[in-house]
Image 1 (cartoon, rainbow, N blue to C red):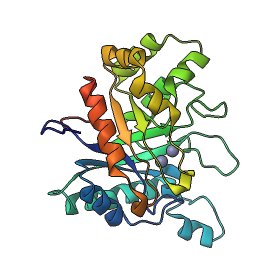
Image 2 (image 1 turned 90 degrees about the horizontal axis):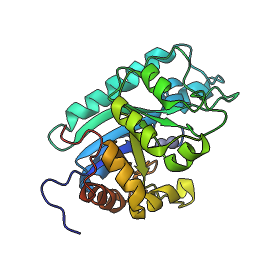
Image 3 (image 1 turned 90 degrees about the vertical axis):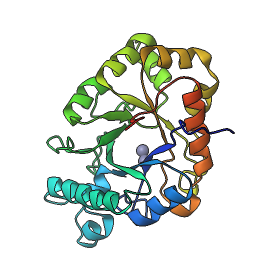
Image 4 (image 1 turned 120 degrees about the horizontal axis):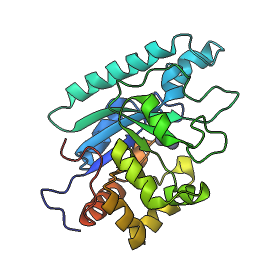
Length: 255
Ligand SMILES: [Zn+2]
Ligand SMILES: [Zn+2]
């Protein structure tokens, strides 16, 4: 595959030990991305991992929710900002947060008052779940976040169809609000080496591509890595290239 100097290679979805399901230090994750030729890396830990100040701290104390959720979010942000500075000559790092919107007894969903507006971006998951605190309304929820928002690992065309909306109008609204859509190219043991069907579908479905292109919605590419040694940067690079060759812009392209 041919990459020219204008091809932007981004991975906007990487986890570190701030997520319950990862043990990698931010440095380990960043260095895997640099080695893999990634130019722009979005570290994007789960709000519940961050909010509990990492599992070993809160679970060891026998309590799941840290008393000062807000402080844990800013501390994580500050830590990632330091990591960004450390690697600033080698890679562009964005500090994001992946927001669980699932109502559950474990309180994993982002608490109502938690401020995430200072993050570089937020990835919203479970939008299409009947128990989502978004109530299926990404537009209102993105406003509540107050930072750039992307929709994580969701078959958006199927979701739009399920709520009886017109895809063109829905994507047009997303573009107007700057909401981007993630192409999740994960393939690792944590997810039983399952890839996302909606990504494969989008990459071959010209009608879907035309809607995204015409409405101006941006896409992001994310490996959703939880285990640095299983990172597959080629999946990321190939997808970035295919999207840009369609004339579709990536989120934060040119920044
Ligand atoms: Zn997720
Ligand atoms: Zn994730």
